Image 1 (cartoon, rainbow over the protein chains, first blue to last red):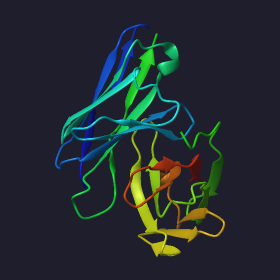
Image 2 (cartoon, rainbow over the protein chains, first blue to last red):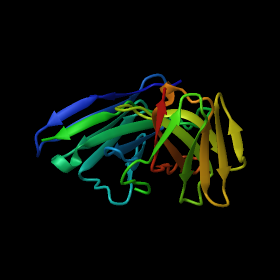
Image 3 (tube, each protein chain N blue to C red):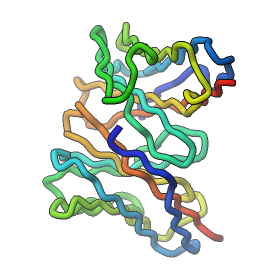
Length: 117
Length: 112
């Protein structure tokens, strides 16, 4: 199946700093990428949907100025957590899909564990 | 988001038994449903999917049942193995993937 990578796989940062997480589709072009966050022992919560070349669509309650999403190419989307605080510590997962391709599933990255001290 | 659980329910089964994991979804506009398996510290892994024009679909050792009337989805795993131990999530949304939400999840614990 298609492969989606995330970098870094884990990051520890100080409160107040910004952290960038990359999501790449390695062997296909992702017209749409999705960003989720997951707290321990909880489900995945959709944060935003990003389409290549356009602004991301954020879910209700997700601060777009705090979670900056850029989907500049068909293989890369980035999520920047600005001025991170301990409550932003979470597991961030991206997924990607090529709407132009046959088949109807989305492929998930391995996730990025963010810990804010 | 639409689906946030306070904790994950756990289903414990003996190796070799069949497992049934249930999911209730809330979005009546959903017409596409997927079951994912998530191992600790990893991203979700696709298991099986079903569209709303079907009520049953079978894969290798897995079967998904859909009851649209009561908005209920189930995953049946035959001859459960220790390697099946993980958290299982249902996900649902419109087939065009404009919105895609996850259910609250169930932790499957397979005892050898």
